[in-house]
Every structure is written in structure tokens, then in C-alpha cells.
Image (cartoon, rainbow over the protein chains, first blue to last red):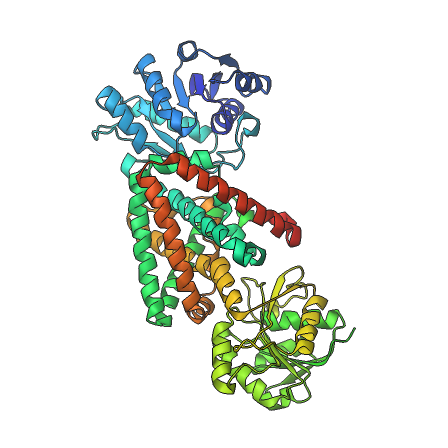
Length: 302
Length: 302
């Protein structure tokens, strides 16, 4: 079923390219138009069939679009989204895939007074350590969560018809759609993603500093490899994400430090039972989380 | 080649059972004697061929041993090791597999004035989320590091012949042996293992506390699953390990908090370049660590 006639992808990398590929395979779109600042990217996307038309001029790319997906790097997303919203009619959905929503909401509010109701802010919780259009894969979003924002900055509801159609597009590519407010999105992602990345970077920084005298990495094993996997994430991208969600990340860090402090006080008091009780609750929570994740996504990666 | 005639395993669980199995398969021991407080464990170990003789009386188990391996839970290791050292001659090696060495060293020093030179403290850096003799596997130590302590508490060298023979036993079961001091061992393990476990428990405790209102786990993905894998570790065992290495863990936590604090100050100052520089160094360190780990152990688990 055709959901959008003319889907315009602004920034044809891993995220945008994968959505284009999957939407075409699902028959959810008639034509996919790609725009990029880099001509080589557009040519590669065209050659590999990720997009049907390539446009290096933004205005030409946006003409006659009924859905625009901003999939540029985080740092460009604010201005590209603003330009798109200035140029398309209010009946055209403009959505995005960025990991933080508060900063985009803020810049759109500054530009337009409030977030336009056809701005359907989105965040597919999926990714890969690879990047670029060559890494695009039609199943990237299969079984993954996509969060769509259902309120503008002043609490007004976003355009219900466009919100529903963008949701249908994501469902067509296999994703599970949830709707929530900007504040809840940024709070949840700070806890589940931004804080863990920040901490993983911090601990590897510490180990690196100690490594010269103690050769610590030489005695580390699989537990540390898994614990620090996210510290191999792309530095430029994560610098941008963490700064974009700075306020919620700080809030999450404060909460984390309170939990560390509590555990340290149990340790200082030799309160083994207190520690064990928390560890037991934690293990139960974490095992429940992993079981439900496996039921959703990747059974073989426990 | 027979390294020990009569290897006595005190505590026949995952660690002791795996060493017994592997040593027998490698032809490195003539007879393996198992001792346990639990009769069912001994019968299971005997039935599955992990041990050749079962003894529920410690003195009878120790008779004529030329190597004694203490492989009980951490909380019992100190007293069992002390009893073994009281009963065997100085020509018999008494070694162990516990994750922390400082606490054992301290209790032996209290009991004997200094650590007896035939006490060859050891720590194979290997394990499994499973436990008990039924989980024993001959390849548990294959390609893993084993740290042997080469100094007693007053800086005296441990018995060179016994240190060498215990090292040979570990090499026979496929492990890579390194020698170091008690202080270096406990400092390294605090950084590479105890601190990560402590932090993983802390972050899952925080997420669990927030989960009721925000449903956070429902929006978490593979990154968090890997980051928190070690928070599913056995609560009783980790309570004991963390308390046993409390002083070095506190030191590691202080260092970690300094790194967190530095990253937070860069975040507060919007110093994107400063963050990116650290993340870039961190990614390089972490990737080097993972590559060398893969070259050593499990190629398929990157």
C-alpha cells in the first residue's frame, strides 16, 4: 500500500538510506528522492537503487514532496529541518531520525514561534557501528522501536493525519511505533543510551590512563569487552548527541551518582546483605529486560 | 607429562572441576582427589569422572597431596586455605583460584606471621555465568590469563620450584601465566573487573528505579544489553568479591569519579572538541584491547 507518493530523504546515509530501501521494498512509497551535500553520496545512492532521483538542490528536492525525512548528522538536523519546514506546505510531513529531540524542538520554536504541526519529530532506536549509504540495509528497522513525538512545544497536538501516516511508514518497514512527549523521549534516551555511552567513555579513559604503568588491558577479558562495546562508538556523532541532550544527561548523571554513592556507603559499612539485595533486584530487572528484548529483536544475542 | 602425582581440589565447582578435568585430559596429574562440604557434589564429581577419589574429610583429602587447589566460594577460601597450609608439608604447593588476593594474604599473614612460601596464590581470569560441577568444562582455561603471585606479604619470594610447577599445571590446561605482586593484582582487577561490575549494578539500579514511571527498559536496545551484561552476575559471589577488594575498588571508584567529573566539565563548557578528542583516544584504546583479546581468545565475539 502506497503511504507516500514522493518520499524525500535529506541526508542519504545509513539511517536515511535504510529507510528508503525498506520503504521501496515494502511498496510503501512511489518515488524516493535523495538530497545530500555530497555529490558522490547521491551518485552511490542512485547507483545502488537506494533512491530513484538525486537532487543536490534542496528546493528542487522538496518540490511536490508529501513526506520529508531529515536524516543528516545531528549537528545539521536543526537547520535542515527548519529549511524544509519553511519550504513545504503544512500538508507535507517533515520528520527526522535524530537521537535527541529537545534541541530540535527548541530551534524550531525559536524559528516558528512554536513547532509547526506538520513537524513529526521521530527517533528510530536502531543503528549500526557502520555508517554511510553503502551500509544501508532494508532490515535495519525490523522489530526496532520508533518513537514519534505527539506534542508540539506548547503542548498542542501534532497533525493527527500526518502523525498517523508517518507511523504507518515506520510500521511498513517493520518497526514498532510509540508516541510520547519530547520531555519523556529525552529523559528515557538519556538513561538508556546517553548515560551508558558517557560512562563507557569515562571508564575506558580511566583504564587508558592507568594502562601504561599497570598493563591493565592485558588482563581484561570478555566482561570488559562487552561493558565497553559502546565506547567504540563514533566520537563525532556522540559528541553531538551528548551535547544536544546535555540537560537530561546531567540529570541522569546526578541520579547515577546518587546510586553509586549509596552502593559505596553499603560497601564502606561492610553491608554485604544490603549489596546482595540490590544486586539480586538488579539481576532480575536486567534479565527481564534482556528476555523482552530478545522476544522483540535478536533471539540469538543474549 | 605428569606435573603433580596427587592433585587435591578443595571445592569441586565450576572452577575446581574444570581444572581437574583439563589436568586429567592433559595427562598433567596422576590422581585427582576432590573434597567438598556437600556429599552430593562429591558423588556427582566422581560419577562424571571429574575426580578420581572423593573425600569428605579434609585431613584425609590432604594426605600425600603434592598440590592443593582451594576452589571454594570466596567467603570460605581464607579459612580453607589456612587449614590446608597447617596440614601439609612445606614441599606441597597450596594454591587457589579466588578473584581477590589481598584479603587471603592478610588472613594468612595473621595466621602464620607471613604468607608461607608454599602458598602460591593464583587467579585464573576465566569463568562462566554457570556454576557448579555440572558446568565444569575441560576448555574453560584455554587461552585465558592466569595470574600467580610471586611475593609473600613481606616481599619475600614464594618457593620458586612450587611457583614454577603450579605455572606448568596452568600451562598444561592451555592458560597463559603471568606473575605479579598482590598489590598489582588487586589494583588491576579492581579496574578491569570489580569497578565495571559495580558500575553496571549501579546503572541498572537507577534504571530500575526510573522504570515504573518511564518504562525505560521498553525503549532500550542492544547497546544497553551489552553494557549491563555483567549486572546479571551472581549477586552473592559479587558481594563477596567487591567486599574482599574494597580498598582497591574505592581507589578505582575515586579515579572513575575524577574522569566523570572531567567529562562533565567539558559538557558544561560545551567543549565539543575536548569531548571528541577523549572519545577518539578511548575508541582507539578500546579497539586495540578488543583486537588483542580476540587474537588471544574468542575470535568470534567481537
